[in-house]
Image (cartoon, rainbow, N blue to C red; front, side, top):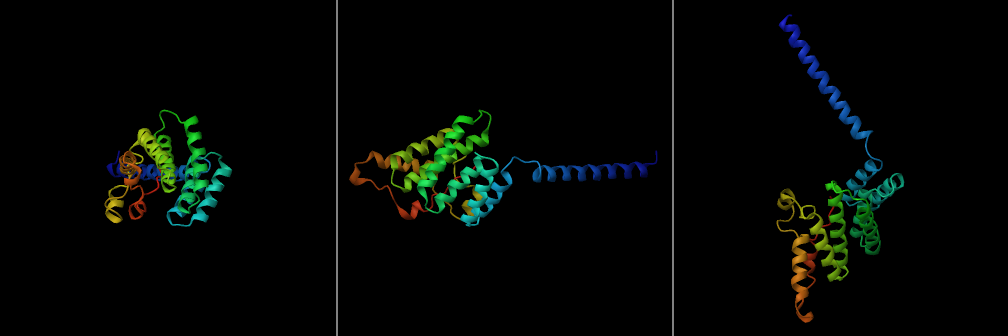
Amino acid sequence: MNPRVLRRFIILLFVATLVVATVTVFYDSVFVRPLGDYETERGDNLLSGGDYEGALSYFDEALAIAPKHRGAMMGRALVFIATGRYAEAIAELDALIAYLNETLAPDDPTGRGALAAAYANRGIVEDREARYRTALADYIKALQIDDEAVAGPGIVHKILYDPRPSTVRARARYLYEQLKLPEAKRVLRVPELDAKQRMYKP
């Protein structure tokens, strides 16, 4: 066989394989994905940009398509936390925690991360509403379920925004120490530090 023809055949075969793989990945990511994922992703993007009402409408749309979509439920809770609608946030997180506790498979690390994040976020709301003992219990539960999921932001976030952000572990340790003190000596709220506490989404 002519070496030039063989070389051309190998190159064409490689290019064809690459094209088919690219088309397959694109098709799977756009057309073959769980119901509600596209809407939840859109909601997440709007949530990150601070468009809370737009994000909420996409999360609602996702839940209309796929009831109990855990990403959409978490997204709704984060919108409620960000907009100070704490009673609605607690109700959404309670529902998400109950659903995940009923359905979570042992070999589902993403679900485990979502459950830990739900407990952590509920703890944040309770913390903001001065229910410190319940907040501490939720922080501890989050750390027991998946401490890596609520470990705090990565190195890039720390470099760009805050080198020492508040974390679930740090806040839980602080609350634990303060709650051991006599009530008159406790300092449970420091607004400038509390403002750095971030919400969690796996």
